[in-house]
Image 1: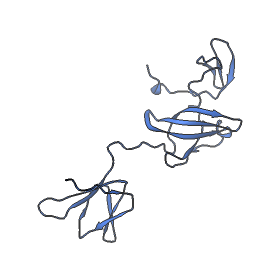
Image 2: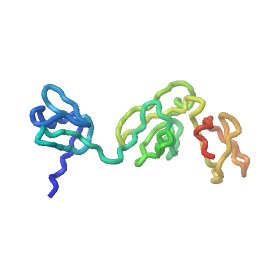
Image 3: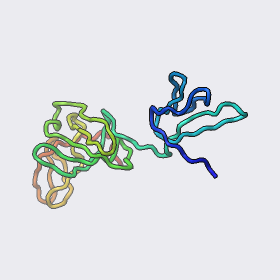
Image 4: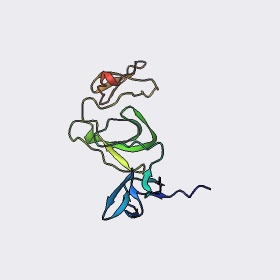
Length: 178
């Protein structure tokens, strides 16, 4: 029967240096081995030597949005002060779970930059479209038709010819799929 799996968290004291030697996912301090990440505790020994103590993460680790990351979001609601979004991609990598974000009205233009705060899946990321490359990539009109950009601040419905003000993204060629 396999030994029970023990999970540990960063900073958790695992054992003293007389009981094992540090492996991956660990660090030493004051004669003890500590976990440097969340995961499963593993001990392996060869030839009667001290066991190597290591911490192994799950095979798929969760990608997190980070300060300065370019993210792709879907707007879930809008009011006069801000837009609530779901973050779906970090760079070109899709997320396993979406994160919530907020784009404030004052962060739509180049007034304040780097408005992202870190946290877990329950956190709310504060985003900005202050750079020229950032903004709306795809929008749909009230009639459900995909709009086309006609300037950096306007999109138009090709069916009804209705214009709507949007801060349009200037998508770089390397991010376009052909």
